[in-house]
Image (cartoon, rainbow, N blue to C red; front, side):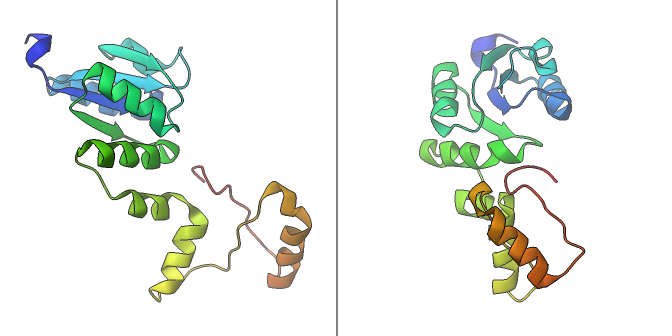
Length: 156
């Protein structure tokens, strides 16, 4: 199929977690554009076009979507790229999940607050910055051990 008539899809991320999406898009006949923070990612060998960008930056994603004339955008198995992807899709009227929903689902402290708001069980939780180390230790002693500490913006 000639490239000018192919649907063009941008996939954010090019590591092993995104390989299945890249391969499947190729099987379905898409012109696959891959964007990843690192140039030496696995996905680079399987896509039609590659861009090394910060996939957490809506501005950088927007530039790639526009310059590559992508018809769609997918953040697959990448929590950190999901929100900027939704923001870009909203601005370009591309199909997406609402950025407000994506933000709640990808930021643990917002998700726990959401669960409490709608009456579903949620673990005792609190969000702290690196500067709040003393407050964090105080909170751990207040709720009791054992405790679980998780990053707010990554898988885990």
